[in-house]
Image 1 (cartoon, one colour):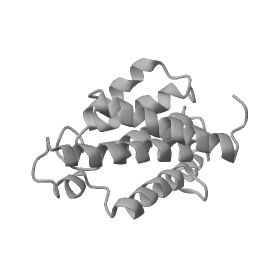
Image 2 (cartoon, one colour):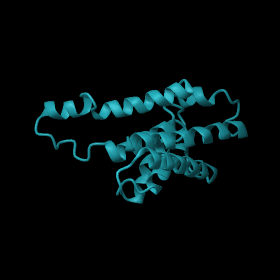
Image 3 (cartoon, rainbow, N blue to C red):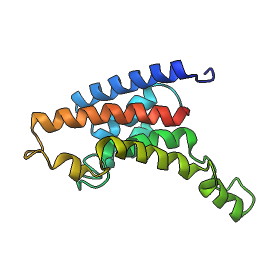
Image 4 (cartoon, rainbow, N blue to C red):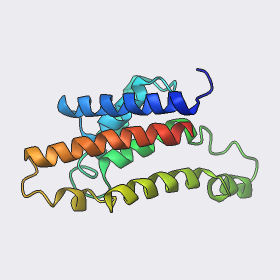
Amino acid sequence: MAEPNETNIEEMMVRAEAAAKGYFREGLNCSECVFQSFLDLGLTDLPREVIALSSGFGGGIGMTKNTCGALLGAAMSVAAVKGRKDPKAKESINERIEELYGEGGVYSIFSSLVKEFEEKYGTVSCKEITDVFPDWHSRERKKNCQSIVGYAAALGVKYALK
C-alpha cells in the first residue's frame, strides 16, 4: 500500500464509517462493526478470523455497559497497525517500558484516541451513552449507537494511519 496521505486517509475514514454503520444494521455488535470495517480496508495482514477477538466487547464488554464497545473496536483497529508485534523485541526491560510510556510511545496513541472520543461524547462509558434511552431495543438507542459505531470506525482509521 502506498504511504497514506491526508486525502486517502480521509477517504478510508469515510469508507470505514459507512461500512461500520452497515454492519450495525446487519446485526454485528458495536465492536465487531468497527473492527470488521477496519479489516475490510486491508490495512493489516491479520487473518479475517481475528474478528472473533472483538465479539466479547459489544454492549460495553458483554452487555455490562462498561467501556464503549465501539471505542474498544477502534482501539483494536489501531493496535492491529500500531501495536507491538513482538513485545520482547527490545533488548532490555527499560527499552520495552520506554517503547510504551516514552514520548510518542504506544500508549500516547491510544490515549489520544480515547481523549478524542471522550471529547465528542462526554464519556467512554456505554452506560452513560445508552442509559438516556429507556429501552435498549429502542430505535433511538440503535440510531445513536450506529452513529457512534461509524465515528469510532473512522477514528480508528485516523489513528492507525497517523
